[in-house]
Amino acid sequence: MLSPATRAIVKATVPVLEQRGTEITTVFYRNMLGEHTELLNIFNRINQKKGAQPTALATTVLAAAKHIDDLSPLLGHVKQIGHKHRALQIKPEHYPIVGEYLLKAIKEVLGDAATPEIITAWGEAYQEIANVFIGVEKEMYKEAAWESWKPFTVTGKDLVASDIYEFTVKPEAGSGIDLAKLPIVAGQYITVNTHPTIQNNQYDALRHYSLCSVSPANGIKFAVKLETSKGNPEGLVSEFLHEKVNVGDSIKLSAPAGDFALNQELVKQNEIPLVLLSSGVGVTPLLAMLEDQVAQNPKRPVYWIQSSRAEADQAFKTHVDELLAKLDNAKKEIVHTNVSDRINAKYLEEKVPAHADVYICGSLEFMKAMIAHLKQLEHNDDMIHYEPFGPKMSTISV
Image: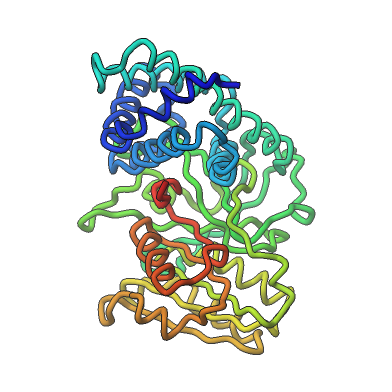
């Protein structure tokens, strides 16, 4: 339990964190990964480069400072991050390293303003916060479908859009994994552990990919978009999987994770429509949700809204149509931004029922825009669910 004096000092640093939080976390990552290069086998260096990871961490630290009197309101966000940590196999022994370099970064950025009292208070606060994460993640490790990383064989690789492959994988002999009994929740992701042999890479690279289906009996399915910048491959893992990994090859996966899931209390009823709103490869987890809704209750009204740059980039066209055809009341809206305007508040006002349960997935920019539009239209926060392809805390306002 933190003392009143410690809590007061931490709360007093909120204005500084609001102004310089991302600067502190950028220095933190630079120093920690520079001196602990083994952690480069865990952290996503693309998110570091783009600034998404420092921003997400800064948001988390700021939220903790604002709620240091009572961290319970942050438990939902802690669980979201905890799922990522469990999937990446981040363990309790990693937390002291993070704490050490976070305090060093605060001192480096703030200089003399980071008094011994402030550093001591933040050291105590960090341990309190770390204990919350460690406790949540301990339970997640217990509940995981399998421990650590398991080898899987690629049994299928299908092009489902101009830049998206769907991979099907099955566990290798001796893994102890029974696909027929594997519990998968629509909206979850798996984490791929690779060692790309491209871009002068020296380290393992881990990436989360959403599951395309809740029916794993014939193999676990996930989709990978080739990340590019100005026409050139940018995503280390996506380029490796697209260009180098083929049917018959072996990859390692950690167990399915994630808290992006359909409200099961609403799946069986028909009064509140389901809206599935995606952009690009963000369609992947929503495809699994559509499959789940069809299987459980095909009478529920479903609105499918899918945005992509062009028709060639529209993923899973045939499969989506097959699933929608099994519903009694389905509406489909397709937006190609090369010939149409991007989805805005007016579009959502016309296409999305005000009382609907809405699930959104896409890039961070898409997520922020859709959430802002829906809130502008006064949709209930409890009826807006989302999963960005990037650090989730980057979409949170604290």
